[in-house]
Length: 189
Image (tube, rainbow, N blue to C red; front, side, top):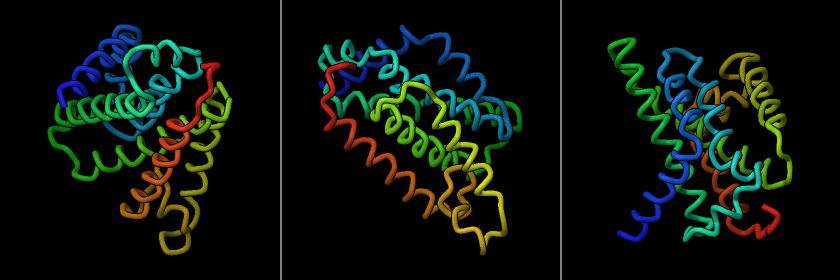
């Protein structure tokens, strides 16, 4: 257990020293109240493991004593910590109270799009064009019709009108991306 904590500490030091300014600015953006924080969570995801894969730094990161599973999980936990701390701090500072569904809805959104970013990057695309198109499709497809007629809004990571279905869908996307990330042995990272 202490070895895992030492690895996590080393990963945090590596990520925070190389991405200090973007992570700090995105933390401040996540503190803003309202739906704008979803945009900053989306941008935060693009600055984590996706940026390392796209800029071909993964080989350098894997040269440290990290396994592929640890890199994926540590990057996911780092983002969860930033989203949780930023949203709780911002909501309590700006509104004085925290909506009880805010944290689960942000975690559903973060988990699903973290998985989407990793899947897109694992297939060789190095731009955020496809995740942005998926976000726009999620915005438009989830808003049509009513709750009873629009089945997509039940599993939508953005609308998640049924938290259980949306949680299962985002966990499924995250699990598939984890399996592909751990099993893909590309050396051109």
